[in-house]
Image (cartoon, rainbow over all chains, first blue to last red; front, side, top):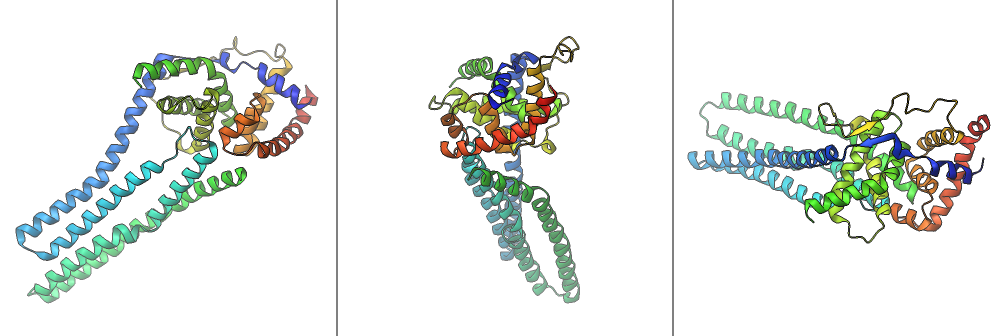
Length: 198
Length: 174
C-alpha cells in the first residue's frame, strides 16, 4: 500500500461515532476545573507569601515589644523572602506557556519555565535559607552576648546551629531530589523536542 | 466575552472539530484510560483558550495547537485522579458497537495499525503525521508547529518512509 491509500483509509475513519460527549456535563466539569485551578493557585501563593508575611509581623511585633534591634533582622529577612517569592510568581505568570501558541513557542516557554524552576530550587540556599538563618543567628548571637550565663548561651547557640544545619540540609536535599527526579528529565524531554523542531 | 458566548463557541467547535481532537488523542495516548484523561485535558484547555481566539488563525489550526500543546505537556505519571468526577465521555464498548473481525473492513485495521505506528514516532513527528494523514496543508502545519514549510516537507518525507516501513509487514498481512 502507498501513503495515499493510508491517507484515504485514515480520512474515512469516523472516530466521532465511537464516543458520545455529554455537553452539559462537560461544561460543568470545565467550570469546576477552572474554579479548582484558580483556587489552587491562589491558595499556594497565599500560603507561601502568607507565611512570610506572618513571620515578618511576628518578628516586628517582638522587636517593638521588647525594643530588641536584633529582631528586626529576621523580620526584614522574612519580608525579603516573601517579596522575592511574590515578585517571582508575578513575573513568571506573564511568561507561562500559552496552549494556543505554536508548538515551538510553547516548548520554548515551557523550557524557560522549567529552567527557572531548576534555578530556584538549586539556589534555594541563597535566596531562602541563608537570609533567614543568618538573621536568626545574629539575634541569637546578640542574646548570647548579653547573657550572664555564657556557657548556657553558647550551648543554646550550638544547639541552634546543629538544628539549622540538619533542617537546612534536609530541605536542600529534598529540593535537589525534586530537581533530579522531576525537573531535569522534563528539561531533557523539552530540549529533545525543541531540537527536533530546529 | 460573556460565558454564554464562550459556551456557544465551544459547542460549535465540539460539533465541527471533535473528530480532529479524537484523532490527536488516539495518536498520542494508547490505552482507553489515558485517551479519556488526555481528551478531558484537551477539552478543558480548548475551553480556556476561547477568550483569546480572535479569528486570526483558522479554527482547526487553533484547535490543533491547543491539542498538540496539551498532549506534549500531558504525562501519564501526572494523571489527575478523577474518581468522583462527573464523567462526560461515554465510550461505546458494547459488543454491538465493536465490529467483529469478519465484518471489519481492511481500512479499519489499517487505521488501527496507523495509530499504533504513530504512537511509536517521536512526539513532533507524530504531530506532523497526524496532520498529514488528515490532509492538512503545509502552511497550516507550519502555523501549528512554528517551523518553516520547507522543513515540514523534509520531515514529512522521512515520516512517510518510516510509516511505510513500519506498516509494510502489517499491510501485507491484510
